[in-house]
Image 1 (cartoon, rainbow, N blue to C red):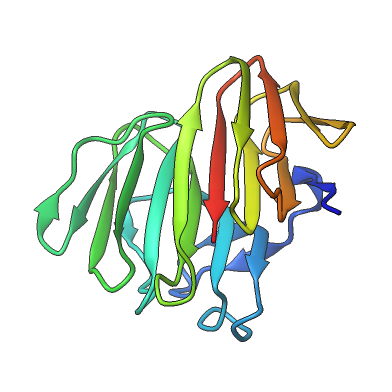
Image 2 (cartoon, helix red, strand yellow):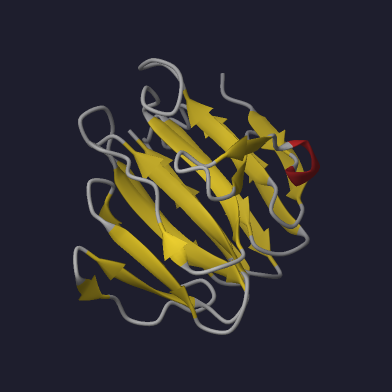
Length: 191
């Protein structure tokens, strides 16, 4: 039987970036496929970006990045400029790509999902405040809260998820997961 597991932002370990240019708060990773920064199946993290510069390469992986705080950024991916990325605007790109970041007004904080498409498939979506119900057959359902007071109910259990906390449900089995949100949150389904 599945349970709700809440990971608190205050407990996330700080990890160095692969390129050594900064640090990341690692929310959660799937180490089933190996270990280290090259062996995970998927990883969720929060990064504080204090200056413009290059991204780390994650060869063989896909990335989805979302600005959480700050004025935003614009990426140049393999020589092509992205649209300006503002708060809660997600962008997907290959971890094989050469990526350069230009901050649009000072430091930012971003949310990252990096995953191996050879090992899993993912669905990521940002949802706004309100009440909704999801039925998922995904092996893992993750819920990341961008604000305070997200209530998640599953199998008779309700958990409150605070700002930047993450909730995990494994093997939801098409049973209803209900969300009552006062702020935006990110829903990730991993199969």
